[in-house]
Image (cartoon, rainbow, N blue to C red):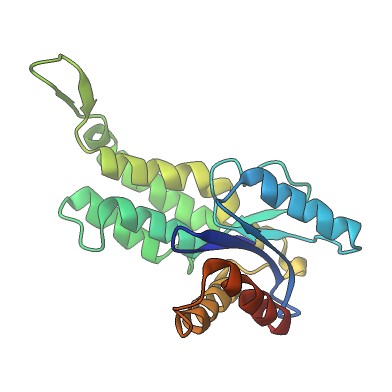
Length: 211
């Protein structure tokens, strides 16, 4: 499940079964809300769907609170780290962390956790460095972006390898199935750029029904 946006006009939240290659439910909404995801899951249950597992983007508050196993999309986690340290990090700590993220989709939880701990053993003191404002006396972490990147991985770690804990469920480790749908929808809608926002929604619904 995930949400994509069409400029600042509206977003569409989609719940998809990747194994059946079917979009089960979608909602148009002005912005992404955790509660909307939870209500969507409950609506699917009421319609008779058995939720075996959930794959999502890891938005804060979204990973907890479901009875089914939850897998955070590993590609979203890599994207979060890249957003903080950029694609070409200048700091060695950022370079090392970016290199570690390359292996996220290729190793198991024990191996990745070990490497993350080794990274912190090397760079932990670096992350604690502070810079004090000479005028206000207030301080900030000197390498705040690298620090935020690391803690996002550490915080989400319990949900990054759920797919390996339940092999019988065949849980995807990414939400790529849905990302492909979003890309296709935006291309279709982009061909009709003159349409008003409320006229785009029926087109999007028609596409989602067919995919």
